[in-house]
Length: 284
Length: 286
Ligand SMILES: Nc1ncnc2c1ncn2[C@@H]1O[C@H](COP(=O)(O)OP(=O)(O)O)[C@@H](O)[C@H]1O
Ligand SMILES: [Mg+2]
Image (cartoon, rainbow over all chains, first blue to last red; front, side, top):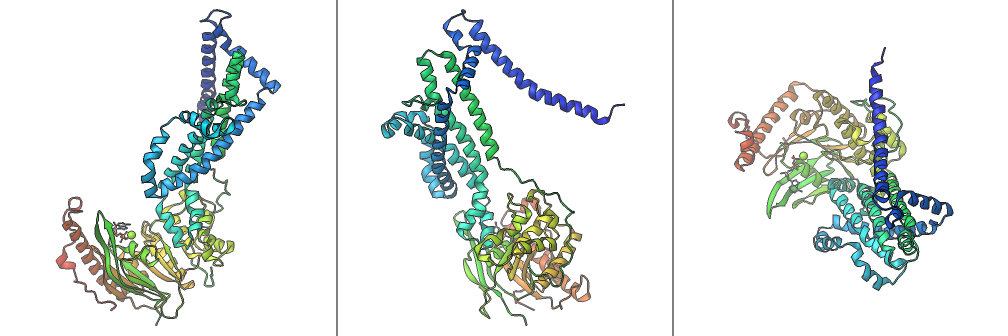
């Protein structure tokens, strides 16, 4: 005889198969299209065939094995780290001010709304004039692009903060600093973290074109360099790697920055709907 | 005669609403005796919560003042439990109760042990590691109350603490509150819109009317330390307060209707004024 939950188990495993199967199938279709476009639709040995998946993955495997990309990966990761630190150092206080000070928000909104709409890469010439060539203009471009998600998310968090919590802290005789530390900051922290997540992804997207400007390391530089060496499989390999690292960064930051509740000991007993009367000698 | 640790003198509160002043309450004067329960009774919207916040110096008064412990010079600390529990959602029950003890101003008022004891005394020890969204309304209120009491204020202001509870739980929690008040020797101001609660708990009962809020009458329930839910004396007083309260309510409804606010939603005022209004006067204590 079938157990009643057997059907449920089967549905569940069918779902699990779907959860793995569809992404795998999607990836396979994508690779097939890519392969078809670079092999079937073009003359064998033509220019476009150098962008095919097989040589790209072969090149990627070879470079990773030799460690030829390590220097570039390291340089890129270092740049987005520095850029994000700058963006946070500016964006979090800016967001706190935008969300908390009405006059500041009113004064700043036209400017922030305007500047935010400018593609970070439009700042390139200015960045080079201001900071010369090398890492500093790259830091600048990353920071100016990722500062907005951080600032705006922080500001939204401050605005969503329950004003009554501040009164609560005051009623418990908290000082201003204690109020910020125990109520305001924990209250906006989830939104700051959301802003950091979005900012990290933005930073990674800006990084690659920024590295095409007068630096001699990093994955963006490597793409241009591979093009100049006519190493098209290597160039495609770098693009794949950029996507993969971006995916890992996104997953990692979302895992790191999503607040989790402590696992707790289970309830030992039900709470009393009405507590027992206090013992006569009860003291706080 | 208990001394007066808390006195409200000619308190008036106005808010700026849409460019003009709106008076929430005016000329409110109250004397709250030490280690007694003071019940503040009034229809919703008459400014009870605003008055309580003013007493806790969380809201400045437009006129008048709040005097604390004027007689012996000692300055009693005031704790308030708001109408909403206002538990911080990222903290567990235990951490919420401990919140006040983390502040320098309450240093020495309690420790880890006193938190554990108060959780047990409030029947919420099994919930110590739960988060606020896992609590029922009554549990959340008790956590909020524990958080207020654990910092050892001498005066405790309670804003409709048992508002959303069923009558039975409410009655038992009232008794439990009396126990807390007596063993901790607290001065309690409890806001309520429930006449029975006010009469049962209050050593004094003040009736507030709406639009703008005014103290209509203050009754002394003149009872010993023990309370009964039914006695000839208390039911006569209850009757008297109930009648005055209904008069105030009818007045509030009429004022709302005249303001054109509640008319469409509520129809005519519920209470016939003539039969029930004892024409309360503002004469202080009886
Ligand atoms: N910050 C505020 N700004 C403007 N009006 C307010 C504010 N706080 C309270 N009020 C008004 O004061 C009146 C009394 O409110 P409240 O004290 O909450 O009454 P109660 O607790 O008796 O129901 C209400 O009409 C409310 O709208
Ligand atoms: Mg209220």
